[in-house]
Length: 191
Image (cartoon, rainbow, N blue to C red; front, side, top):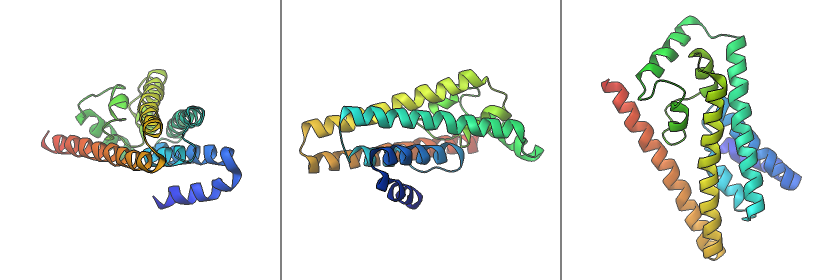
């Protein structure tokens, strides 16, 4: 979480636009480089101004970052193909998943078992438009749901209770993702 904290700390000096840019950078890092717990930072930044307008702006930025991060990684992988042994490992890994085509990108929002999805789209020669549609729709549904739920907490409870409920939501979301990924990993090991 330290990278996310540093990003928010840097961009927070630039007000609302800085926070929107911070969420963009966090989601970009998450989709291209390594998991950055974007759900956590999305809800933390939302809590600074829990309103419908702010939630919509953050959701738009999260979806845009998911789209651009995965698209950029796709283009980089297409242009600069990784070595053969890495491509073979990626192909072998993706063939062991429950769903072996682009639809795994929707499941990946719930059970994150496929890292570097933009690269997988390129290596597996999945249909880019279909793949990116799944990524965008999955991001909009998941992050929209989290923002609506958190907004509901702020509407129903006083700020302190709403923040605790949102924090619990973050923990439940991250834990559910870890458990689902762990179960899929165990399934892959026995397959």
